Length: 298
Image (cartoon, helix red, strand yellow):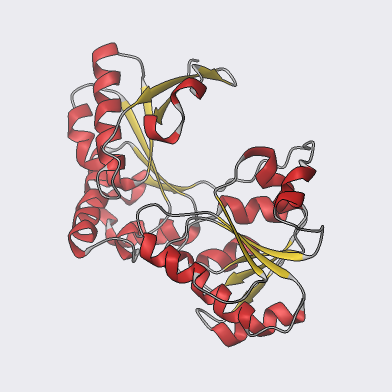
């Protein structure tokens, strides 16, 4: 079977765009690079590519936000699968208008897709309760993490003046729902020589990022986006990993941290608690003081 992955032009420098990766064909297409239009415009062009070139029998979309376009595929007889990670319309990053359209998108997803794959039991229950008529389409499929052996890039530790086992780590987009502000507030109350390393960025909300960085605590290190072996080296060598998110599905980063044997602390929302099982620690939902106590415990 042939696999085609559609990639966004602005995410990859032109001369570094691959045509194939691990046996999959990569198709690079443009999009309108704004928070509200990036995904929908890229998906629109991807659907047109599929229809005009008749390249795919099964189409897998990640996120219900694309589903307003699904009627374009209705007469094509192509099978459509959508993976969802919870109630997107509850995420704080979206405006009221965007949340309204996300609710409509969720309906279009269950109406026009053949299968809805939830990445957590919580997401499965949300969709089955909201769309009872289509509950037979909705399934929960758990997944794991890729924790292959790597050749560690020690230079990245030197770059940020880090030592193995001497820092706490967060990885993710710097958006309010990820709860990075809770982590920073709690860390600043802890008397420790450890560093707090924050990997990630957010070009669509520079004001929030500025507020996070506008602290006087020199122990906090912002690295920006890091990928590949550099990212995995930082993850493998942290003392423990913190996932402070307010809204989440099954977090791939959290699973990877656990796969590498790192201790984890998570915000006490159902999705995070279900993910860690008995293999981690959680703090009371959005409670900075409880998070501080958990950090001090470790």
